[in-house]
Image (cartoon, rainbow over all chains, first blue to last red; front, top):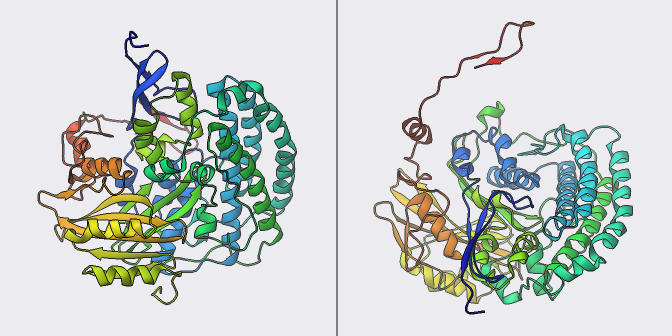
Length: 371
Length: 181
């Protein structure tokens, strides 16, 4: 091997896969990666600075854009944080609607990433199927919020408007459909020899590396075997009132991590059904501040509000000086640790054709690294 | 309002342990699982080491807030204990003039890129972080660090980019709907 010349390859930024606009510089000898680093910044739109220049209310339109495929977690972090600072309690119904939306979003992104494994492995059928099923979830979003991608629905004080009449019929039917199709994904993806050849026993993530980097979410749960999920550890909304399991594993390879995503879809379906069954009566929102929404004031102070995204702990550190605009908002993207330090320290050693798989199964979303 | 009595088990014990060891400048219970503690600069590394040994194995975030009127940068170290589900946010203020801080990468490895980010957006130099001065997100940036409060993004864009005139007319009601050239 030592007579081969090291060459530099660029993975991205226009990769057709899932990871958006980030570039990985790979130094390759033969087909083994010797050195790698992520070059972020191609999607940097200055969100944190823009938030400081907008009123609390205006920010509702901006924050979902931080993460494209799973925007609701941003809305939830922002809403929770402002509510903590203003010391207001949102109505019971709002909590349940929020959980419903967040879990629908989790299903939609897990479907997308289950299908997305078709990109680097060449199994495009998975991608088409999953996108079609994800579209059914987007239909629900459209019916509830009026938008398919950026919903701007979870707002400080509750949710923007009540659920439309008879929506639970559509939701239940869609959930039944998705649930009945899940075994087909099992056949198509997990029992498929070509997928197994690529995913089983590759891209290992030992528990020590999890702690070293600060990986959260499925990466952490698949390696440590503990149910380290923000929904269980520090429950927000009413996650302590619904029953669900957190799938875990003690051996983390690419296959295990994909498998946990698959299993989490069932748990999300379970949570949504409980939300629909136990949906309380009442108002869906309260005012967080007196007067016009454009003059909302939030009490001075700071808080960190975190939620469990599909990739791990996602949080906003919000500072207010008592004015009509946030003084500072810092976004803790769930994929920041593995996306930057992880690529530098732990990607070397993989084969070059596994590098996109590394990206996919570690759960990296470049918009939340750039912000 | 949150206080030490209605917080999660383990949180007030951590605070009293820290209080016994270091001179704390302020403690505020933000949520039932979260406490924010203001420390002085020389104690911070010891405080973080203590917390890491006490079970706070994860650095959730490291960031900075610019308090322009006070003339200080506030560094925020956000650590989390997954076993107990409690969060401690250590905050320390450093002068805004020539801001320097010693790296915490020897305590939390994952801080490496957070420190680079803080350097890029606020100009805080982390001594001991080998890559602290390298650019990460902003290619060929040649102005004030952009997240500082005295950086005006509108003025920067006016100065940096050629002004373009847009002629936009939304038309009369009922007439041509939209025209832009």
